[in-house]
Image (cartoon, rainbow, N blue to C red; front, top):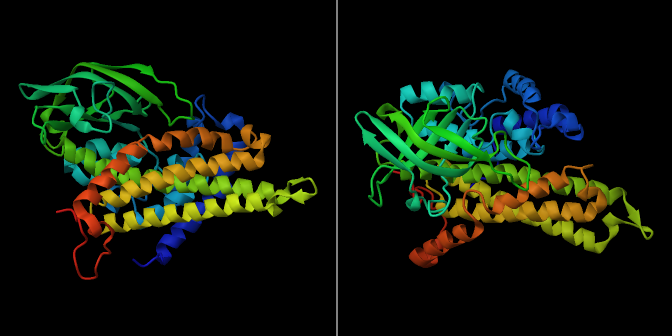
Length: 409
């Protein structure tokens, strides 16, 4: 692939970088700008979003007809990384999880009526959304085939019963995409449904406390006891729920990585600046070989992560499923984010462990990266499956003029 980005993408990157530097970074030092769960306060977020929209930096990932600019996955990789130089960045541009992934799957699989009803309000920033899949034991998590929440057809409606948990953003969401079982067929037993928070027959049992800062709406446990959903609000077709999860989760995992790279780079930025000014035992930290090796190693690992993300983004732009590429990026970037935050704290010492910098925020956030959207071990098992099936072809290069291996049909 050609690693040069277009002048248009570079223009967006520069404008996002300027916006983050000018309008978002200064807010991190003021505790009044945070909500009770460690994210940017909603009242402040509304004004920032209005500025981003006015500057043409809103919803880059969507097509123009859906309120975006039609940015490619490669362009998204460049821009999302720049957005997450700040811990508050992505949500300002309407490019944060879970709305980001939900908008993309609605754009890809929604009917024109569903896009108008369910996608547009999210794209316009009027409502937030949640993806309702993960269940407590013995239900489904990384393995969606274990999903036990049921949607039984009664007349022209489906009635839902079951429980879900760790549903990101649920407390603030109005639009929900629910994965439920409609038959026992192992390949076509799941269906995706759309529902609104005002519909009866479901409730939030609790907002689950976590060790890190939270997305708006937290991570919630939900109970369904008679939620009725009309057939017209099936997303992607009856029995096509597995396709919906695959369509959503692959790109969503990669956009996580795009954003995490921004946080990893920010961690090194803070560490490098402090090492350059902090002196101990007659020597700057930046002049100590141990610190140089630590930062040099992390710079290399971040670049490896960037290359993996770019390869996966390129493959997705070629209409490939990119399952191997996304899994590799997910494992590498999640781990380098955690390592970068840890090293940043170590170099800053007590300052890094305090709330005087955002390093402790990034560190608490980073630990979830190795769990969300598939734990490291799950992705490594996926890679081993491909290795077993493909053998030496696991490492093949795409050949010019030939369809990309694994291209979507």
